[in-house]
Length: 492
Image (cartoon, rainbow, N blue to C red):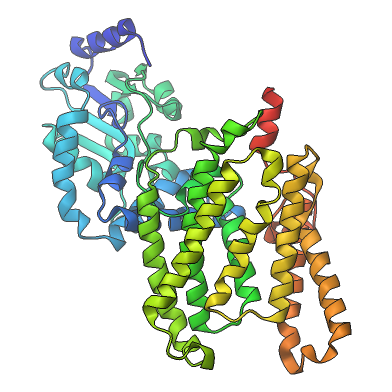
């Protein structure tokens, strides 16, 4: 933030009027907020907007791994384009939100200091259909707006540059007669080109979009484990993939597994939330991420409501298949819902107990938590023999990993992915020797898929890179991912 004397000098220079053109950055300068974040926050329904934004971010990160895009330059453009196209009704809602923002968040000091008759140019990385209604509501509808465009003709100033855009609207011969004010060091090129410029910090960093919005898994991904692309690498490619490989497959069963997994993980996440607030009281050296400490908007009541919705969808998806089984006939739908909610309630109680124990005693409950996380779905989806061995190997390997961590060992060096693979191979071999007729015909396919999936995960863990990058770079090892546990111990 700038000092009062710096702000006063800037306002005085602006009021003096010794120039022909006023060039103003918009976000956090003329507008004391971030227009893109507030636009995303104004979209309704918010949950749908958040999911669209999350999908575009994930896609851009994937493309960034291949080097086809620069994530930081394309992120806002992709977010705004996707939300504008997929949620067009918000085009009619935004002008009202823009008027409210113009009344509450414009930089009145800059507005009041504007000399009459001076052309105003607003130069921004933001987007025309977002900024123009705010300027109009603030009485600057006649200002020249140079910005990105998320509508045809598309233009992203973060890739083309502000200098090029400014050159097309303000002749070079007029640049020494222009007065430029911005808050961003990203505008260094323009600051150097315009002799009369000020770099000022007018407001604190604005809150990102969707602050305070509760959605399942959000605390886990953004609070509990904010580093390392946890949603992709752990939740999707391990926790969920594990279930799809272990349980009998049909499209109904696959949909049921996904929805029931989401319902269970929603309650599991309550345990994570309490673990960062209750369980740490029983630890001498608690490790909690900064994101978890300040995470807003988590709601246990909403978690149970979301879990109920996922449960209904999961049971409905499983119904067409399991209702044909003789032991399922005549079982009422509400009874099935009650059974699954009994599982969720038991999981909640076990995690509650786990969080109120001293760390040494948690070792005995940790495997039970992961039994809930892996074997609970057998109520609705048949579990294959190979899948049973895989899930058992998962519970054992991750419990060993937790034990090494709790006893102060080098748990980062323990490749639990490789441990799970070895346990599965040994168990499958012993089972096959004892009962060779257990895999008739083509049922080896599931075991082969499990083996290759486990091998890929073990290699990724050993080399600290995803399999696509490993193949591209010839299996070279990369640096280990950051760990909040290591950071906490370094601070000690």
